[in-house]
Length: 183
Length: 260
Image 1 (cartoon, rainbow over the protein chains, first blue to last red):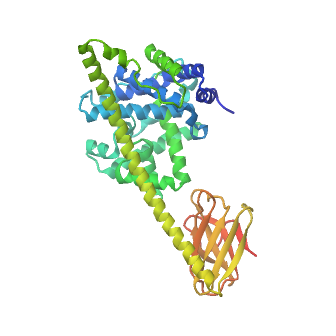
Image 2 (cartoon, helix red, strand yellow):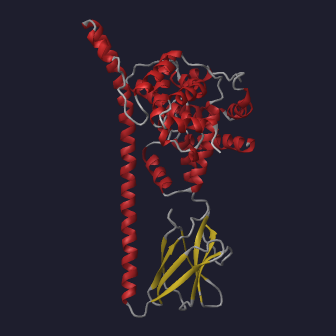
Image 3 (spheres, one colour):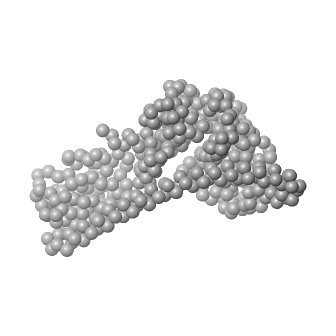
């Protein structure tokens, strides 16, 4: 059976603008904090958010429920666009914002009231991330939130490429494990 | 030794979006071959990372974003390209100074956006090129197999043995083009892809015990061709079973194809 989110995407594909509004209201508050966390500037984040939802509106017909929930679809899109933005700024040398690590540390988890229905599961993965050996956690965060490639991480941490790969694999295995056991 | 370990590692790095260089091309090629194990790893990783991404406190974005999206959607149906900044023209009509500033800002935004797109396109192009090279190589291999089979068929000593689906795959069919001195080619259709960690193994029957004659995988359409070296004693029958990926010396799994 189609979920409410999937129904909205289908209606969007048919050109239903009200569905688009409802879709935005449902998902924008979830993906916006992720974009803010990655690009770190709220005005930039708002631009990225707008691009992300515009792409969703235009690409609604290409959404395939078999490949993931609308939530996952939007997260992937939001992260990709946010990282694109960060990388473009980095290439142009315009941003000398706080070092990645500070930005990461400044994103405290606070299970909010609106998200209470999902807070259990979410907190679980977050706790798992926090409990990872620091080296594994750092490698995953540099990749996922800072958009560094394995080569860039290896240069930044002055660790062999193989070590970086292993840290990411071990850390991610643990996170997958937690999700698998929770479902 | 598990030869899939390397790909497990590449899959994890790919999932966090950090794979680059040769590793990226190599992993995408592997993925294009339809590795179910890596697909599962990616799906589960995506789910775990997604939950992580949503672990922050929900936050309502600035209202102007919604207003602007709704206004844009009113002017364009999905699937069609819409002008990106419709308000640019009136802007430019203002004073020269304002126009210059607007052009600078728009230029900057557009430049950074296109730079990101260009990078992405370059990556995609590299991946497509890699994929094309691989499919060309695969086609060449396949032509060699067919040519070998045709050569065999010219020889009057060659026989063609039909294999019928059995057990878990009654729909499957197979045909063995066999020559006692030159060996043969097995062609298979309608066989479901083997589960992760498994492969199909061919057996020649005729002696006291079935002799292993190599493992193979089927493509997404359920087809396969498999080259067989000549056996010691001329085999009377052939059978295919589902076995662990590395192959086994004596059959252990269910028979999926057998000749009469």
